[in-house]
Length: 438
Image 1 (cartoon, rainbow, N blue to C red):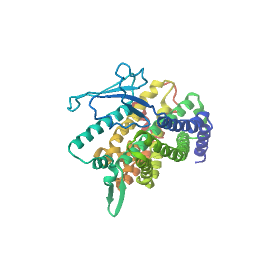
Image 2 (image 1 turned 45 degrees about the vertical axis):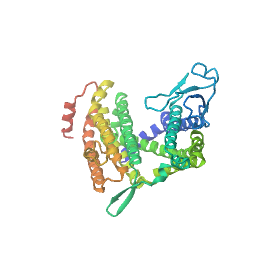
Image 3 (image 1 turned 90 degrees about the vertical axis):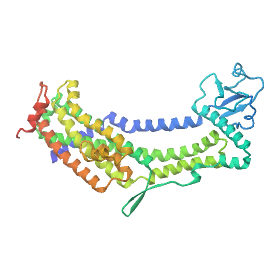
């Protein structure tokens, strides 16, 4: 055990003191979060103001169109489709005189793309004007009409989904659960590839540089493999912990920044909402944030994520180490030998896309029980809160049993392959090593 600990320390400190580790662990997440915050900031602040000239031959739109801080509507007499740019307008909106049937068309002419938001706002203004005209023609009171137009759909009723299991009830949000499950599954999916490949590269480098020969004179091959796997696992957990601290700390700062700017953005983008509507938009953002923190079963998600993060890594890392031990200097040889390992991981990702939206589907349930796919698929199911405890227990036990089995098999391949040079190893030959007596 002491020798395994020495290998763990060597692997851990060699990697965490590397400049690449420091850059990828600290600077890259900061850059990524900063990029997202900057993009959100500039998308809110850089409002592209438009001035649109309207030729209303119908006569019903002049009193209905409402300008705001983003789009200004004007009804000049001497502006047309040919000279609107010279008169300082961004676009020219032509409304025909007889605009009553569905076959009639409205033309918005511009010298460049106005953007999806601007075009949609123009359509909304036209739709509102036509709807108001139809209501008034049917003698609907204008005050009643205004009150209908200002109804907030969220104020009509409150909708919630509650999951009841026995005596326990829990608020549910399917969209949130799917997003958390999908994100957790992708993170573990990336972990298996990134750190599994790191184990394989480490074994290959030591073998090619003949370092393994020197080390094995002091420790057993299994001790070297176990120390390398656990050491890199500790590096991965260190990265994960630092990322979590950065994300939690920076997201709390960013959320207050975004909620304040969302209030201003709502006032600029929707003249009809008024101050109350803008406050409602900001309140909705804060409610969404609170829902994210309260609706998901974090007391179950976090420990399960750590278990499947570590368990999934250990399960596959032993296999990656075995592949690294039999590869010589040919990269194509490594890719061909990795195929039986990478295919189950990719298949798990495919099943996860179903499990995130349909956690109780048969393929989701079976995928979360099999050790080859359970680290990714089960984490896509758990945020839904509908996974029975016995299924989680069976999944964890099978993953631990699978890890023990794969480690024993990988150790037999590693023991022989790490000292084998200049020979291309086949799957048939590795199969013989598995049944060779020590």
